Length: 355
Image 1 (cartoon, rainbow, N blue to C red):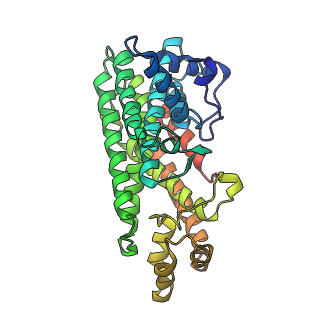
Image 2: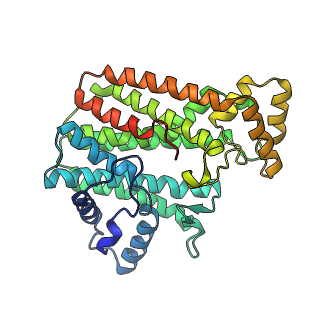
Image 3: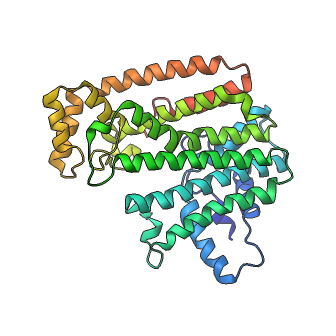
């Protein structure tokens, strides 16, 4: 593949923009870690390259780059050795492959139209439901990459277990989300803070926040069993991040967040609707039951007006402040200063974000 195809095309938002050398190593690691086996036919190499380019590239690479940043912080260095950089980048790309796998299948299940400004993969002519198999291929790339480059490492089995655990939790969260918002079975009485929290933690927090740091810890020779508190903090951070997303979906500036929110139309179990159900009187609940999940502008406007009437903006800012203070206290309680620094870097990048 051409060198330019290996570069992340957009500077990441949630992590520091990598130095030029980081981009070089990131590009090189993806090229090295995912070479097509010699036995593959030219046709399969060509179609596989096209599928990978379409689905893995184009994002911000936040999760993958977080592995490199966290590993540097844990080692206390500004520059990693060449082989250390390669291994960190390889695990970062494995997470990006996992993300692509989730998104390809998620778009099919949600019947989505676009992803990252282009048609969803299954909507590309001549792809269709072949995208299901492509998703499986994306996931299997991870196992092959880990086997090729980490099989001789003492933490190889831990890496396999980690990716398997995170994939299972994410799939469980996706299932809970799907059955909660199942078309034709709309029932707002199923929505509560406990359900919302479970969906968020399993669907988003584990693979977006915990997985990159866990990979960096394993690279550093640490035993993940000794970092249960770190795992809990990162999952809580992921929960806070998703609540922000739910808030911005309704109250954020579409120009800043890069999309027009559709949680109301899509009947999502969002933090806002859960809060509304908890604080609304019977008349206000009637408005929600009548209008939530409808796509016409008038119904959407009624729900948003109710959110404002219930002053959910103030409720969110209170939640944000309390979550931040609790996370700070939990981070400062960690015995390792390096771990504290890793966790603080994550928190600082998402606190009071506007996109």
